[in-house]
Each structure stands twice: as structure tokens, then as C-alpha cells.
Image 1: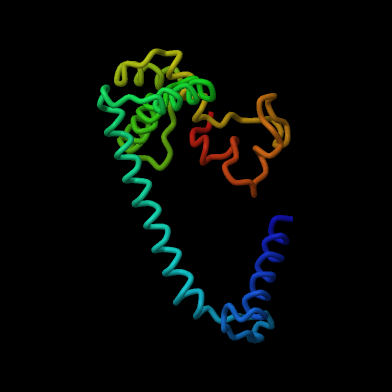
Image 2: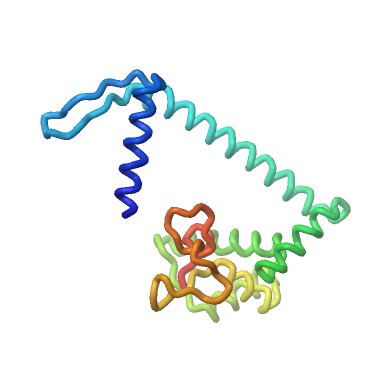
Length: 186
């Protein structure tokens, strides 16, 4: 079904590009009998623009993160906005923003030290390591792991009470139950 939806969208875009004059592409029948389209516009205009725009956004987000991180490391610069952000993180994840960020960086570095593409840990041992290295309470660490762990479900469409159907749809952006939001499989 998803493949069919992708093809419909692709051919709709090709039709618009061709009929509205957005892209002066060539269309023809390939030796295999399939329809082929020219990629000059895509390679010479769209791709460079997209890469430049993406890099600008990355640079902007990195700068904003560094500014926010610098501000948070200075206790005098704590603002009402920081307090609201922490309250939101505590309400949604059960852990403060900076503690969650510290856990994420710790897990990344610990995984890199393993020199394996995928690190496997016993949860109790992992909690013990984080307690020792980050000096966070066990309850905070467990809340952080719950925010980062994708739990195994017996059936794909069966959800825990706190989730909605939209959290499992593969085409939905920012799903609560995805490996992007929950990169640790438990």
C-alpha cells in the first residue's frame, strides 16, 4: 500500500513538473519498456538547493543548541523559559531536559567505546553504570530509559493505553513509537 501511495505521489509530481513547466525534463521509453525521465533539473537545481538549505538548518540548530547549553551551564542565566521547559520534560518524560541530554550523550559515548554497530546491555548493569558516572537517581535514569526505549509488542497494531494509532503509522512524522524517538530496543 505504501509503495502504491509513493508511486501515485511521484507520478503526480512528474505530471505537475512537466505540465506546469516547472521542470523542462525529457520523458521517453527506456529499452526495458519502462518510462524514463531526465534528471538534469533534479541534479543541477533541486539537489544543490536542498543540500545547502539542509546545511543552513543544521548550522542554525547547532548554534541554537550551543547557546542554550551555554546558558543552562550558567546557573545565573536560568529563566522562566528554562523552568517551563523542565516542567514540560518532567511531565512528559519524568526527567529534566538536561538530565535526558546527559544520558543520551553518555549512552552514545558508551556505545562507541564498545566498538560494535549495536551495543547490548543488561538494563540493571546499564542503570548501575549511569548512576556511577552521571550521579543521577535511579528513578530519574529509569524515566530516561523509558523515554528512550522502544518496547517489544506482541502485535503491531496493539498499543499501550497512552498511545494513539497515529503513533504507529509509518508515514506519520514524529511518531511516539519510532526508532528515531526511541532508539533503544528493550
